Length: 315
Image (cartoon, rainbow, N blue to C red):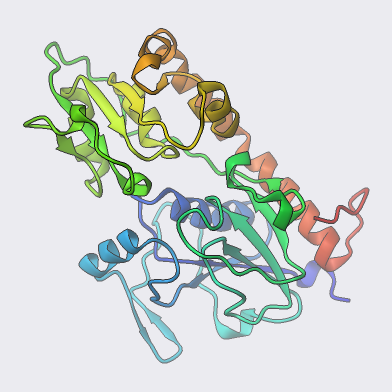
């Protein structure tokens, strides 16, 4: 059996994009592992439309972020603010734990030790294919499929984007909205009015400006941080319901949305009454990230390396 000192983590991830929350999580995990003294690397995802969202790949193709030439990664985008080295073929071995997101089908790297991070609910938008001996982690309860995972362990890497702020514009007007993972939902009249601004794939600077100019933000996507960012920026933030019958059920699966965000038009009074609590809630969740990664290391070492950490937890 390999030892803890031999251990490496390889995270299978697309190039960095500040527009895609799941990708930020993957890169941030590598950064945090390295800051904790572990050895962690990114493995660039080959371009396949079956992995990650088609909208993401359209964005990446437009930006031409990277090319794959032979065994060398050319212009693979990483964040200059994160400690995220790119793996080489020699970094894969029996002492390596490879982590895949839920949308990656199977085990493309042929790894002996596989951890799976559920960044969204498997099967809800894309097919999934997991191996028999994988270890499961989840961003939230909504992302889990207990019948498949046996109950995944919480692992979140929330980071507040400080570009979002309330600039206290004296005259707000109009509406903005986002579609993203809610692209199957019928449109409501409120987002079909003349001048309604769709924010999908705009830059954070542009979106912050839009949030500060508009009166109300509508999200067809029920699990996006833009709902919280809209509230921070002074917008009335409304999620268009579908997946859950009540606000209570939705909040159970989206703890970060318990303040400042309405689940449906009838819930707007709650959003307004609690909007000043949003930033504090996000800051508290951000602080939990390192503890969650420490737990991730503890459990993966116990499972795949056999390191004594007080007790062995099988997932």
